[in-house]
View 1 (cartoon, rainbow, N blue to C red):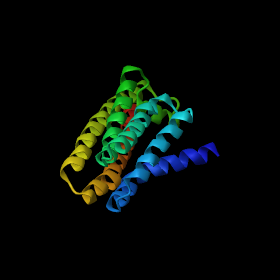
View 2 (cartoon, rainbow, N blue to C red):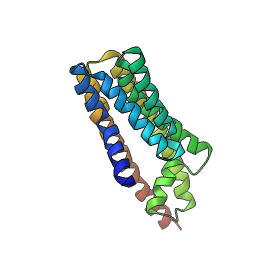
View 3 (cartoon, one colour):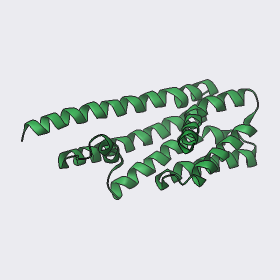
View 4 (cartoon, helix red, strand yellow):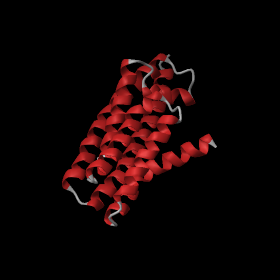
Length: 184
């Protein structure tokens, strides 16, 4: 049941731009504000990984400020906060290793060699740059574009870019490992 709840929460966060886009075009931002607060509170109370707290906190803040100010811009700012939160999370793992990408890599390769650790550290830095750029683009869509552009970028394009970066890193890491192992 706990796994199912986490899955539902994750899906709702992924679908968030589409939910916001639909609700704002129909003048219904209050329930989306409540949904965002609720998802944040459930994640917070669900004993989730403390690394997710920046994302959780920003969900609660954006939903609350939207309700209190009756301003839907706070709802549109959540993807900016997601990217900034991810930037914080990934950056913190550079300060206190293992890096985030090393953590992901060790799921598949528990015995990651030293060269792999160094590689994943560098890739974590690339992800930090990505999240900073993504936050700036998401903010641009909030401030200077239509709702349709905001939904398309934050609900689709940003996820495609993350997928390309993730897949590209995986392929390059495997290539790096083959080259490094053949040199020894």
